[in-house]
Amino acid sequence: MKKIAVLGSGVVGQTISAKLTGLGYEVMLGTRNVSSTQAKSEKDMYGRPPFNEWHKQNPQVKLGTFAEAAAFGEMVVNASNGQGSLEVLKLAGKENLAGKTLLDIANPLDFSKGMPPSLTVCNTDSLGEQIQRELPQTKVVKSLNTMNAYIMVNPDMIPGEHNVFLSGNDADAKKDVKNFLAQFGWKEKNMLDLGDITTARGTEMLLPIWVRLLNALQNPSFNFHIVVGSPLKM
Image 1 (cartoon, rainbow, N blue to C red):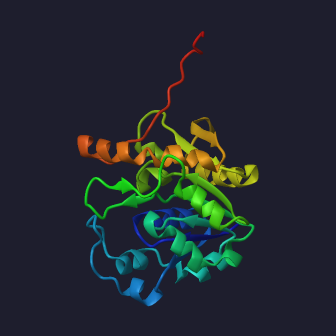
Image 2 (cartoon, rainbow, N blue to C red; image 1 turned 30 degrees about the horizontal axis):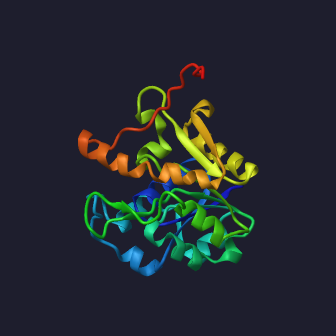
């Protein structure tokens, strides 16, 4: 596959899109309103350059509506805001997503009461599961949602070994995502397949501790490393 759709024009969507084009993929970034997105001239909440400046630096990234991007891509990345992901995917169109692998990076974070955010869904459900239920013909794989965008595409930013998790029902879709992860620089031994899409509950629920770690460390350049010891004798 050579054509990839990335839904979401924020920092995650921009970072993933730029990395993929650098790897030789054709990328269309999906947004709600193309002209409004192109007209953005203010810095984002992180102080990053406005979208139009970023796009001038990455002109090879095509820009389209969510539906246009979803139809374009042979594989789709959901890099939208988690609270709006279900609506974004509805606008993308079930027919445009059917049969495709969808890498879901979004987290169901609720910032309505300020920092730290809470989760809009947890314990008995997850955003990943909600997306899979809404899109039964799409092969959803949850991954890369437990780290910042720059580490997603450049794991060597963190010294030593650290992990990326995968959750999903379709083995072939997981192979697609693992192939992408390897191209981003992830070692296969550090890719932890947690099981079916219900295991996304666990990785999404890492976000509250991630936010507290960010506050404690005052540095977003960190990740989780799972160290396995000898089996316990019961």
